[in-house]
Image (cartoon, rainbow, N blue to C red; front, side, top):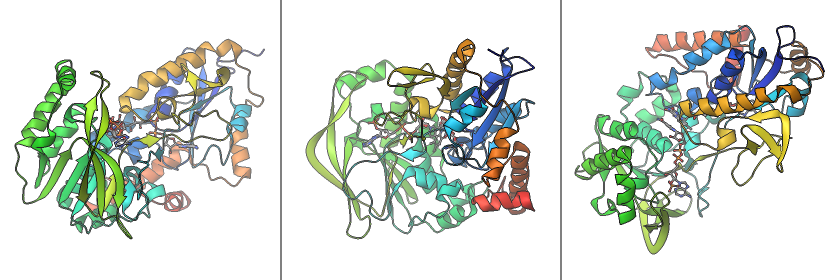
Length: 455
Ligand code: FAD
Ligand code: NAP
């Protein structure tokens, strides 16, 4: 067998997806003693996954995580294949013809549903859509949200729900200095929303957001965070959970401060607890959201919400379900429908418990849609470690030709976007932003991104 992983014949790895997990994996491969060449495939002409398309515009410092990834992209054995959808423009099976290993890091782009009647009524949306819309993601560019109502309900109490609430509550004077999409800023400037309910099915001690995001709510000019005092309750098991975690204790203290606030004249952000979704109500569009009051039972650390039979309606004109993202299958790759992830052991993909050397997985599509950017680093490192430990048993690919894949895509009429091409799009976005006094004005249509390259 030909030796691979040496300067004369680097280990050829295709990484699918250019979010944090893809870039952390690429970085680790390129720093390894085994000589690797990494080609990264990304379905959009622009890189960085949720760092670009998810992180909120008013969090510029977090968005700048992409600078670390740019360093990786400068490596001489790294190539970027943007505007290439794996599974459509090229299959995973075909990639395996050109690469010794394929590492899938394509995230979890779908959304979970609440599975309640009325969920598909007009003005009932997934948070995913709203987030993609204000971040100029081409998939969501043409979504329309009716912001003319007074009350919006956000179901779920994780950090995505906090992002959505902040974007609804923040004055446009603050948002206008960010890289929010221009059409979203215009729509939010006309917003009449005054009441924002963030609704959890469990209690204050089980909220999924993190402390900085909670504290930020008190810093939004004109907005008042509120907690209904009769929903600010704790069972003995809750108190044990709080005692066991100083971080949680601090969260509960901040919520307690909010419970002492009185509604303000501006926008009110209402943290609601012990309410499980029952139905989205309305004739032709959302008119209210019906919840069942819950109580908690179970062991500390594993408290579950149980319905009490008491129903609570919250009249509203807009519903965002923020109950989690969901992975999608890719043709030819095993997929666990229940967890919506790719089955694996330590990152090596498995089909019904049978290992598939040469096929690996990292990030949200490996472990599910949880964790911050940094969480993906150890996750990707685990996968790369497994991949490199398989070196001896990998079947070298049939066509280790770095030009062949490019030729195949060109024959198929795919306009491949290189990292230098992305830099041109990037420079143009920054220039467009500078003209408006913003850090950047993003392109929200693929054709406009590609037009920059053809100009
Ligand atoms: P992703 O970032 O989703 O990257 C996957 C990439 O694969 C995407 O670029 C996608 O276009 C591409 N892709 C998908 N399908 C294909 C295909 N078939 N072919 C080719 N490419 C494909 N973490 C923080 O630390 N701070 C924050 O402020 C923060 N804000 C967040 C806000 C939101 C709304 C969300 C949802 C998450 C946020 N996170 C934040 C979490 C963080 O973004 C994730 O942990 C991280 O992005 C997951 O990385 P990933 O690489 O697995 O997936
Ligand atoms: P998440 O943290 O898992 O929160 C999901 C929320 O939805 C939870 O409150 C959950 O309640 C609720 N939920 C789930 N199913 C439900 C149902 N059927 N009915 C009612 N409620 C339901 O997910 P996320 O907010 O999408 O965030 C994903 C990841 O990205 C997280 O790790 C998050 O920290 C990260 N992120 C980070 C930032 C940041 O750092 N600023 C910003 C955004 C996202 P239960 O707990 O009761 O299940």
